[in-house]
Amino acid sequence: MQRIAQHLSTCVACRTRLAEYDAVARALKTLAVPEPLGGYGRNPRLRAESGGRHPRIQLSVVPPSGLGAVAAALLIAVLAVAIFARLAPRAAHPTIISGTFSYVYVTLDNALSHPTSIVVGPDGNLWFTESGVQSGPDSATTSSTPAAIGRLTPNGTVTRFPLGAADASPTGIIIGPDGNLWFTESAANKIGRITPQGGITEFDLPKGSNPEGIAAGADGNLWYTAPGTDRIGRMALDGRLLGAYTTPTATSGPWGIARGADGNLWFTESAANKIGRITPQGGITEFDSPQYVSDVIVAGQEGNLWFTSRPSGKIGRITPQGRVTLFPAAGLRGTLEGMTTGPDGAIWFVLNAPAWPTVAPSIGRITPDGSIALAQSPERGVLKALAFGPDGRLWFTIDDSVKVGRFSPTD
Image (tube, rainbow, N blue to C red; front, side, top):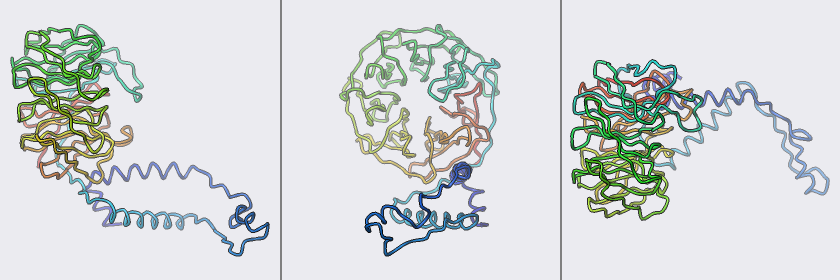
C-alpha cells in the first residue's frame, strides 16, 4: 500500500484511473446480488441433462462477502493485469509536469462564451474564437452570448469583437501572411479577417462548406477545410476563391489542416480515418491511419506532422513520406483535443478525462521520441486548444466556460 501511495503521488494517469475505479466500485455496491433459482450448486441445465437425476459432480458455491470479496476481486484483477502485461505492447506511464495553473475571465456574462481556438498574434497578444453556443450532447446550457473574436494581452486585459452573426460559430484561427488574423465561421459559412486593431471583414464561401480548419500556404494564400462538401479550399488574401479540391475518398470529413515542412498542406479526414496531403497545385494524396484520426494536426519542429487518435488514447505522427506511427501511453484515457508545437521542440496537447465532470483534464507533452508527461488541471472543464504566449506560458481555452487558462511549466 505504501508503494502504491507513493506511485499515485507522482502519476496523474493512475490517479485518474483510480478515480474511475472508485466510481465503479460505488455503483457496484448499490446492486443487489440475487440467488440463482434453486440455490447455488443446483444447476437446472445439468440436472435436465442427467435425466432428472442429480449430476455426479455438484458444486456448492458460497459467494464471498466483505473483505473476502474484496480480496477475491483484487486477486482476479492482479492476475488479469499480469497476463495483460505479458500480452500487450509495452507502453510507458506518463510522468508529471510541474507547473502552476491560473485563469482569466474573458467575459462576465451569465451565459457561456465558449472559447475555442487560440493563437498568438503578430502584436504579441492572444487571439481566440468564442462560439457563444455550446454544441454536442453534453450541453446543458443554451448560451446567448454572441459569437466573437477575443483579444487577450499577456497581463490579462480582454477585448471582444462581436461577429456579424451571433451564431457564426468561429472555430479555427491563424496568423495570415498579411499580418492579420484569419478565422473560419462554420455556421455562417464564411472566412473572416480581423486586423490587430479589431477591424473585421467577412467573405462568403460556397453554400454548405461549413469551414473548420485554416492554414497559411507556402503560396501566400489561405487554405481551409470544408467538411460539409468534402473539399479543401484555397482563398486569396483579398477574399477571392481560387479553387476547391474534392478529396478522393467520399464522405471524408476534412477537418484540421497545417502546413508541413515540405511546403504542402496536410489535413485530417476524421470521417475516413485518413491523413491527407495537398500540394499548392491541388494534388491530393491520402494515407491510411491504423486507428481513428481526430480533427487536430500540427507541424513538428523535426519536420513531421502530429495528430491525435482520440478513442485509442494515442498520439500519431506521420512523416512527409506518409509513414504513420502511433505512440501508446499507459493511462492516456479520455479525449485528446488541441495540439501545438512548444518552444522546447515537443508537441503539447489537451487530454480531457472520460467523465470530465468527475475527473479534471490535463495538459500533456510528447517529445519526438514518444516520451509523454502530464500536468493535471486543478479545475474541471473541457479544454479545447492551446498556444504558447510570448511570456513562455501555455495558454488554453476552456470550451464550457467564460475563461481562458494559462499554465506555467517549471521543468
